[in-house]
Length: 433
Ligand code: SAH
Ligand code: SF4
Image (cartoon, rainbow, N blue to C red; front, side, top):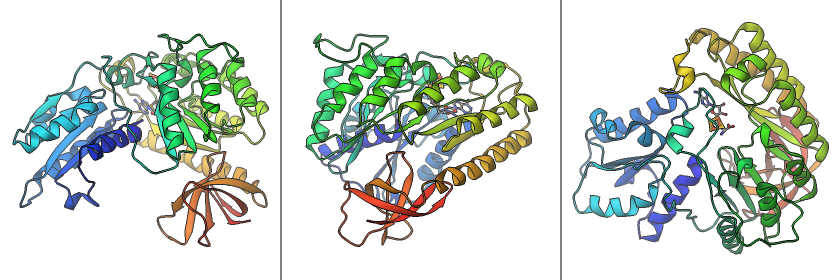
């Protein structure tokens, strides 16, 4: 979601004549987009902003902070970093071009925060070029998981009108976009808290707003792959699973955060599902489509998590056969219910549990990726790999990174067939065929 917001700001600034610098040393303005999900992310952003403001330069650099941390800490950030040029709240980045005009006129210390939940015209601009794009369909979150700061900083849930989303997807497709990822914190809640379909169109296969949107996006000419994130297990209704089965453009991959494998912890986290519910959703999704890949988020060291409860997360990850997983050490966030509980698992123990799950995931990733060796996969070419420009990387429908030799003919955004000859835990390697 932050990548998407950053891109939106870049597009807005492009449109009014700013140009992007190749690196921060050449820039007149640096805007840091921030995340509040864990304390470490905030510390890093504050540290970076402080360093940039302290840098000795002929023409002092203007540093701005946008996003969730700006929303959470508000003008308090100026007390920590007095030289900051501006701060902009999580739904106010549309005002950045105007702020830069004021900065050019010599103003400093500008704050545009707003209320976390305000309904403002959040910009959904896109940069030209590229072949894959994010499309926000749902702002904010209403779930209030006990550990999570997102509802405080991103506000309550609000779904964008379906026709507006479709218009954006059509414009993107016309500009050459082949793959869209629909974005929301709990994306299957789309259309549950406000009305999104205004045209009463008939003839659709689906009655639930989100599957219906998937079907409509699949109808846009030129869109060959559809992804959506983040998914929540409670949203895996029969209609959703049917959409995944019947709409061929939907990629056979889902990022379905589980957080924990222990029923007690899931309950204290207020996730709204049990281990069995989760595994049931996994079985139904995997039955819907061949070669379905599944990735997830897991938190270790939630308050009161015992060794046995941690082991349940371990076994769940194996039972669900995650292709990949992000593993987070629990970080208390001020104002959340979990922050009132004793942060009982020591930092060393969180680290140990983190390492155990990472090692498990590496082994599992290798085992599952080995199954792809010898097979041919369709890859959406992203471009040259960072380390070796003769090698290109792209994504398979399962969202696996595929590295292949580009003999020169492949362009970014092209779909190519690659025969896999080698696998690592998070990457497949092969040759075009
Ligand atoms: N809306 C998404 C998650 C958004 S936050 C969902 O519900 O799936 C992304 C991930 O950050 C979460 O899935 C969780 O694993 C992690 N996370 C959130 N709050 C955290 C905290 N306080 N400490 C550690 N990890 C956290
Ligand atoms: Fe946070 Fe839960 Fe909402 Fe995800 S669903 S953003 S974890 S409150």
